[in-house]
Image 1 (spheres, protein in one colour):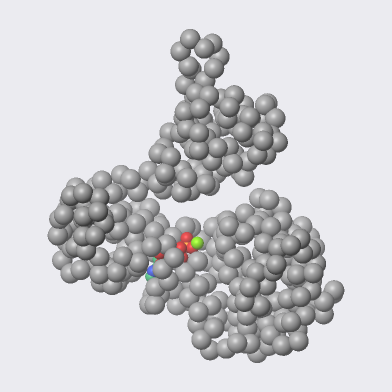
Image 2 (spheres, rainbow, N blue to C red):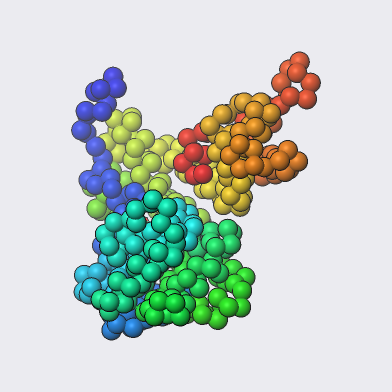
Length: 369
Ligand SMILES: Nc1ncnc2c1ncn2[C@@H]1O[C@H](COP(=O)(O)OP(=O)(O)O)[C@@H](O)[C@H]1O
Ligand SMILES: [Mg+2]
């Protein structure tokens, strides 16, 4: 088939492909009743016009933490406008200003004009309005560990939880979401005394739970008979091994796309195997990328954008972007090579000169950094 034919061909195995995308929030969020109950109890004071209880949601990746928060916020917004909900992913927004911009957006419907408005002006504006309208605020800081890494956390917690001392507004609750709760031990004494959260743990799903969740997803997302029972069980097994529901959801989507590529009406075991290989590579890569810091990530992005370039050029680009010196640069290259993200290859006939290459595909790396 030619490109245009492929694009226009509407033969598909998906009843609704969107249910396999990361931003999809499932209507029926099952097997998390205890956690949803605890989070609801924390939010409830907000519906009565006082401050929600600070809460820390923790547990391994792919256990429904993000989805639980989004699901509950949707429910809150259906029943009340007393409690303003703000969801922030700190991978995307990790400065105090950008986080207050999200709050501004939730309160006023638009981001603050970014003509150099100082943080304090934005804070004052949102707190005054909330105070005037007698509304409570809950802000979910997903991937909150980012704010520990860049050391924004203590100041931000005080911005929010000490708002009453400067602005007379005290109806704020924070929901932090992260994998490992021990990180909160790193808060300084001032902010830990005001934050002091209730903890809610999300354990990995059991085999039966994974089966229930994935089969519901398949019913909405795929046409009947596309995935056989045997292959479904295989997908469940791989998902339970990984302890991450995302593995199963991605695996089903990728297998179905491979089957479509072959113009097959069914997913075969070859499709699942190939998708699984790619999926494990992606999960591995994601894990490696999680373990590096912001500057190392910036370096990796530069390498992805100039894959195969010689080391000197990469170093120049990193210095321009981040001001990193040569000694630190060499250490970082050593580290990225050691974890297996890149390789350095001597250029024939050019002495010490080395080429720097990604060990993974450029697309995969770009998607994640
Ligand atoms: N209980 C559940 N019911 C239905 N889908 C779920 C459930 N828990 C997780 N999911 C799905 O699994 C994927 C990962 O969930 P997510 O909330 O992003 O996990 P986490 O934030 O813990 O890493 C998402 O696609 C989400 O829709
Ligand atoms: Mg999440």
